[in-house]
Image (cartoon, rainbow, N blue to C red; front, side):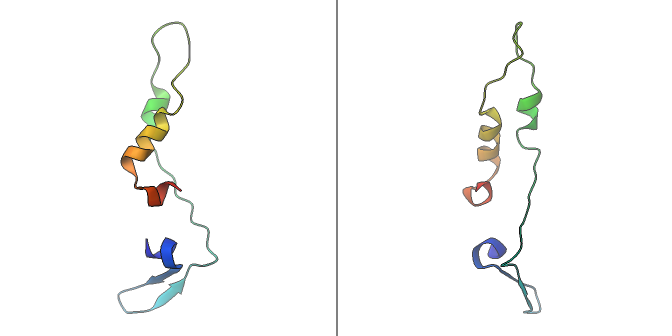
Length: 65
């Protein structure tokens, strides 16, 4: 979280790396299972928001914004 909070990263030797102009892209498979579940019946629909519930359960707010 140091990179996201302060924009710098300090290694074990005390050297600092500047992350102020960096875009960090994080991907996940959280919620993938709920997207692939088949619904019962003739309708091929799923409840919207199921994947967000999985993401909220797995990740703290710092990583969801």
